[in-house]
Image 1 (tube, rainbow, N blue to C red):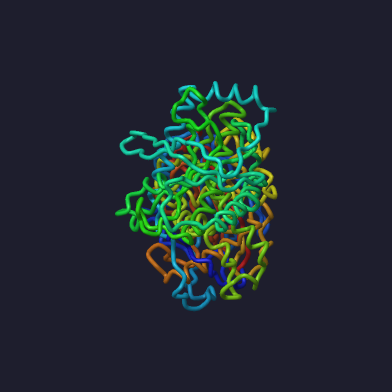
Image 2: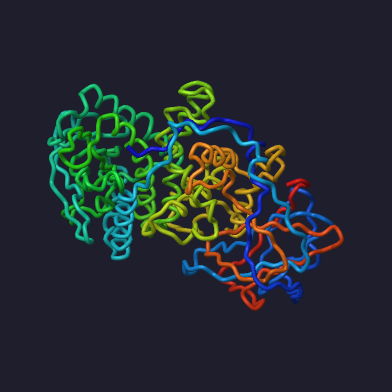
Length: 584
């Protein structure tokens, strides 16, 4: 069973805010002289304590001058674009005159005690990731070929029609994807019985489901849970899906064919496909493998492992709800962009970030339903036990992104790239945007034909570089150690999550480990006169600290390509700058 701990002990945010530690930074030849070539800020940038600014260097500029006299700054170089190759870019960040940044040992952060032996990290579910990647890549090809244009026109023509759902106990056949090996997509025809019909969800069970599965009463409870709790969670945030079959419902089909997508020998090492939606179901009646409806496919309980991996009833009850929320967002997103608006599918990185938000919404539901200390094995837990299966999509992944934020692009990766970091980064970006809009942005991102950065800009009404500047700062400036959380401006903070608190607890409960080596994953490098080169991918950030000398009225920073040349305008190079309070 693949899960992430829920027993995250609560403790004061001030004890675990962004660390004042610095990394070792790049080394190489030094030299303090370089030509002043202002970016968007001419003269001296004057910032009050805890004030932020964005310095745009896409004008061919390479320098910005800040006030000195002992002031300390967080400097975040960024490439906020989705219009570039996803390859590292060489850059240099240096200061004409700077003091050495102070360092504080991790022990000074006042972290909580020893980890619980019952808490653990989530293993990688690479099987689900690679399957989803293949499905979305195939869907993109189908969209490009025009495979959904006729279905889109038919949907708009029959929008107001309604068809009553069939009676409970009736059966029908479905075409279920059974293999995608070597891009050879194959389907099987299965018969399934309708066992539950709610207001939103029709639950079907394959007539050949293995023995030892749900009882009749368990199926009713399962159907009610998806119909009355999970479906409204997604549609509240993201809006309704299309309704190409005019039945007013999403179908949930549980079949051992889905179990068979994952070889049993690999389940313990690579994970398994728990569920999915098949974009081909929107292709219309001319496609022999299209079921012509909104359908979520999932595994069935298989306690004897007859189809593949062993899955008990409790395993399915734990794994499928979060998968349903994740895949239903994908279904809503695809149906709105492609079927309702007759546009392209959403870019993979944005679509995936929204689906992780959907998983998180399951945790939020139980957090609101069970405020501390209720519904917790240990009353000090941050998350109630019932939120456990929904937490796994964002906590570990977001730590991995924050640990190496200059390597995992949040705007250029897609489901074709396995791994955790970029998914964690995209959830963080979506969480930040949601926090700035009370989650209203999510529906706007769905109900459109726009994609990627252009979609975000239209939904937020703000240029993406500005949003990315504040987002990049918020990863560090939210919950500065020893200070009230509202020390930083509201645009430079999260609202619903205290990420430093969660990351620090993850560090404690994981050992520490090679995966989680620091209590605060966002590490700062010192800015000095060193003009050695570093690497940063488009769509990422890096984190530096500048401590100015008491004797210098100003300090000039150079952000440039090698040889002090301007960085390419297409990268939208910029610096997000935040003046740190004394003692940080």
